[in-house]
Length: 150
Image (cartoon, rainbow, N blue to C red; front, side, top):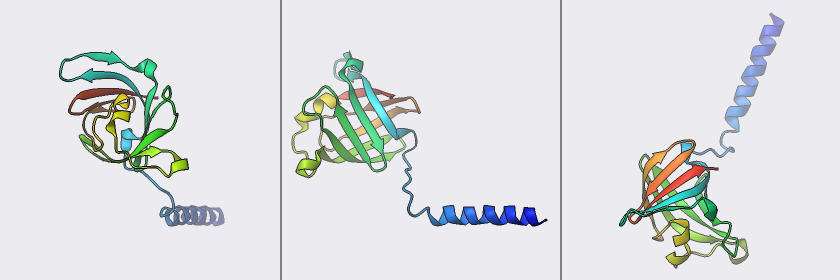
């Protein structure tokens, strides 16, 4: 009886400790969107041309409230980061910034640097055509982007 009481008291104490710490632990409601994605194919919607992008090494990373983009072959090697809003079939990117701590993450004003990464507007809206633990397909106004989870 004493062991059972001690076991229950320990379980109760651990549950209370975990619950009280929940305010300090950041969690995400991003579901399958969270993770590191490699751009594998780009389809041009206007003419149906498909381009294999696996050798380009373009990556998008989603964690918490930020989406980061990086082309590992691009110089300089800093990337870009966005705030985003993800709802069932929609992904809206906003507040794009150069991810460079040395210059205080300056606001992006030129979309041309983003085009090789699949983004054609500073505030881009994508329709989420597919999202699973392994694949993601996003459709913008001009492009369809295919990603694989890396």
